[in-house]
Image 1 (cartoon, rainbow, N blue to C red):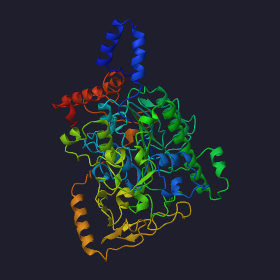
Image 2 (image 1 turned 135 degrees about the vertical axis):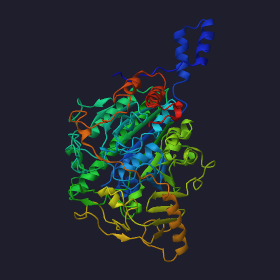
Image 3 (image 1 turned 180 degrees about the vertical axis):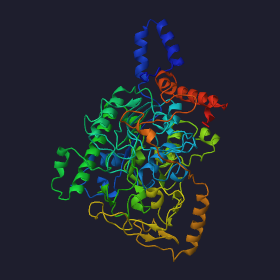
Image 4 (image 1 turned 90 degrees about the horizontal axis):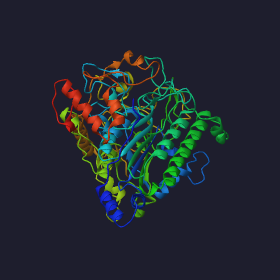
Length: 595
């Protein structure tokens, strides 16, 4: 296994300049120093995406009164003050589909929207028969590599791992230090009991690019390990090259674990889970501050776009075997696992020197969806958003809409209200169109019982209240609302969904029901199989990819090529082409498909 390296291409202009300068008595060394001074940073903006797990709407300091003692997020508050608060940023209502949406640019209904155990696999379908993102979809990190970006990831993945191509490395990340599942113990890094039952018996989930992180496992609080990794990436990065860094927190997901000295800061909170969650929020904010400080010390901040979001609304449940979610989404209704605003409208912001001065300190009410970051990043990087490989495999195209103008152009050029998105197909049961939001039920049968015949869920929506995740009793579903005939809300005039106006606007309901049915005709709902015990033995007590394509090994030339390629994407495409040819499929590199 080779250590990832990169050999920068020579700049013809710089070479010519050096030759001319040497004729005038300059030394090559002096000319190189001069060239360095004139080209100290990349012309393309760095992109840092910070994803928080299970972050409640009311658990962001900028949604609280100044000086609030429970939710202490001074660094995040500063990012909002210096950037743009994304007041209408939407995700799917729980983690796995949201993360697949982010990396693939597809709405959850077009990539992955059922319960997602990464051990699930259907060997009869090598294209879509696995949990997470289908193998032939191109990740946005792959697109950014095409544009010359250095790509690195730290933290939670939760978007597939059966095949190497489904891992962060297979999706375009040069390095990955993190874990594959939903949740793990913060200290042992074993799969957490707060997640679903596991056929492998809760093994260790900690990976370091080419294999299990055996030397790091159990040595520290996992967020400490993640912070150290991200700081190391920034320390080693050459500012002349554009950087894409994805820091994906385990925080604030259960189990609610936090070092004692951090919890002691909130000793005045009597409720145990509320106290732990508040301390975890504060710890998370501290890490954000470290990332920002490092970018500034590297003189990268002025050419950086920071995007920060939750993966879904805060959990307000208290489930047997998982425990209390402990979040608060007030004043929004509901929470994680429901399509109420509290489950899908999330804390989000953009900040950094890339934000134009005229938009700093503003709040944006235009709709932005998690899927939009794919198209937005492609536009920023200057690469084609089309996923030719997915198209050749008959998979859904990218749904994301380019929001770069709305975020990076001046207020005069792209004012608030000029955003391109007017409709969001949230799920098979929910649609937003303009000011109207239609909910026709929930999907809990699909997500918890793996009943793939119940693709459209049921007519009841759970968590139809305004309770917090630290005050509710243990139970599965609570406060179910029947929406089988359509519940309609004016989310501009009634953002907290207090008044169902379906009876007052029957024609709106009719039109939106028809539109939702039309959109649902193109949903990707496939047989992803069952959890395979074969995934338990490959890495001797650790989770990781275990399936190989016909014609090549799991850790074959793809891994080795990752470290030896001198161009951002050549090793990926060469291996894909070889795999296709091995199975008798001749294709162009940019449309290669695994059959």
